[in-house]
Image 1 (cartoon, rainbow, N blue to C red):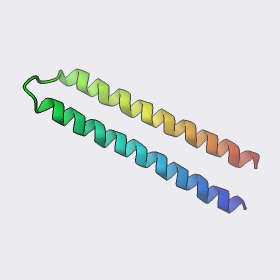
Image 2: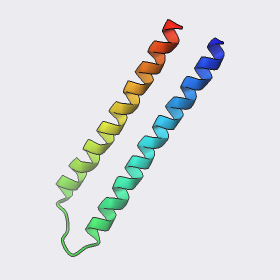
Image 3: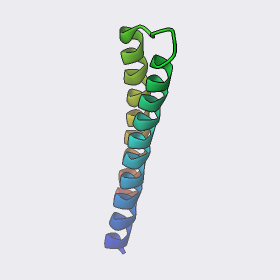
Image 4: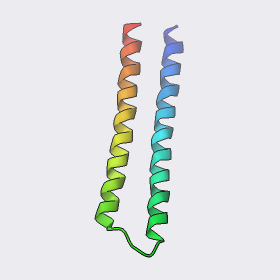
Length: 75
């Protein structure tokens, strides 16, 4: 039973990491599309936007991992 919960928790963590990677990839694609236009975005602002998006996605993943670990330790 404990092994089963651990396997489920690991699966959820892997899916969270996949979402982070997808968010990063999507953001990079958006930035590339924006930079191919006539107006070049400020590199500092683009970097800050990427940082903010990744920080948010990582924070959400960590919250999910904490919740999983909390449930695993209770059960």
